[in-house]
Amino acid sequence: MAKLYNRAKMTTATTGTGTITLVAAVLGYQTFATSGVQNGDTVSYAIDDNSGAWEYGTGTYSTTGPTLTRTLGQSSTGSLLSLSGNSVVYIAPLAADIVSNGGNNTLGVANGGTGLTSLTAGYIPYGNGTSAFGTNGPFWDATNSRLGIGITGPTNNLQVANTACVQTTGTLGYLNFANSVGTTIQQIQYTDTDGSLTIGGGSGGSYPVIFRRASSSESMRIDSSGNVGIGTSSPSTILQLKNGSTPRLSIVDTRNSVEFQALADNIAGYVGTQSNHPLIFYTYVLERARIDNSGNLLVGTTGQVNSAKYTLYAGNSTNTSYATQASVGGSTLTVGQRKTTSVSTTQTLISSVNNWFNLTLVMGTDGTNRFCDIVLWSIGSGAVNVISTFSASGSPATRTYAQTSSSLRLTMASGTYTVLVSELTMGDA
Image (cartoon, rainbow, N blue to C red; front, top):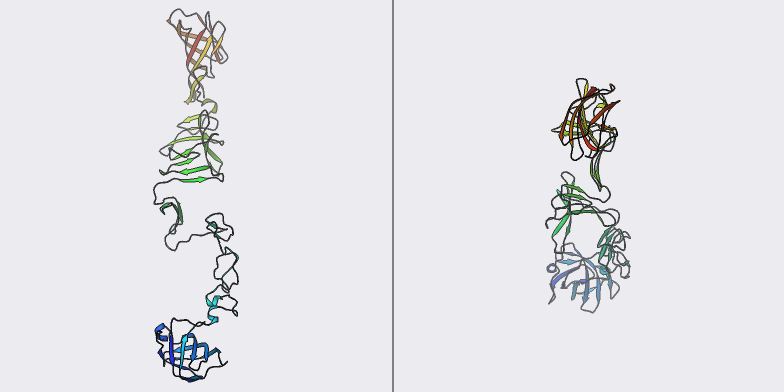
């Protein structure tokens, strides 16, 4: 394509059909050299001869002379003019410099155009070699000011189909989110040195990072203090879970399917193992106690000699046993307490043990009269030895103790008493 320059127009005294020697700039114009034509440039020219004949074409400029060669485009005579020696030569654009393909208004890529005769509304031209357009190119929705890449009819200001990439050529790559005045509030940052991805941390202040489900309801957040909330928008601890249907935290080691859970429901909080494994209590990297998978509490030991002899019972103050058992030198020592209400003239169970020797402290009251007895008895013997009896206040009714199998029973001569039993028992391990 020939080069175009501004206001280059000179006289020539050349005669004939050969190369033109340029003389001087026409008044009001400039020389070819002054307008910027370089040695060897191909330019589009036009010649007006003093005889009234004309010619246009392309020529190669040389600073020696300076001269301009002539390749005919068209002339008034149909051939190169035989110049009279009084002509004007100037740089002028030809039709080929502006329009290609025989003047069909399509400018080719070689001439800086798109190579297209038409352009579908919304598509943005881009270079692909022979033309500047492809059906999978960027799409501009002028009505809504939206840009689609790989998609037509974008529904967001910027919409990319399938794949998008933010690539860094240095250490860090950012995708920033700014407010209406351009201050970056949040960002997604990629660090090339270690491959890490950081979410949040904009320069506009401290703001939470919130994760939402498809329904737009909040699932989780990290607040400006670093607290993590799941099911809550205002976590008060480093990690807080809230839910109206028994929220729980589950930790599972898949090697042996050990599952630890911490949960809360509408009446209590729970902690322990969901799988058939013990719950172990550690301090300073050492085991201090455990609850085995049978519910036994072990302190200072990880195993049992006899699983039936190691149980901690606990309950409320209405009618439940309290007892601890331990193995000492091959025997089982039990310390316990039991409360029984409504002991009356009917023989009533007040203690049930599985040890051979039992020292029992029995305290009772009917609200006015109080007593305390110390009873020694042994299972299987049927014998009951009341070692000591003491009336704390009033005149409590006479008591009769009886031993049946592994139980101690009490009958009051009159009235109804509430009885508290504390005992120390010992038997085989």
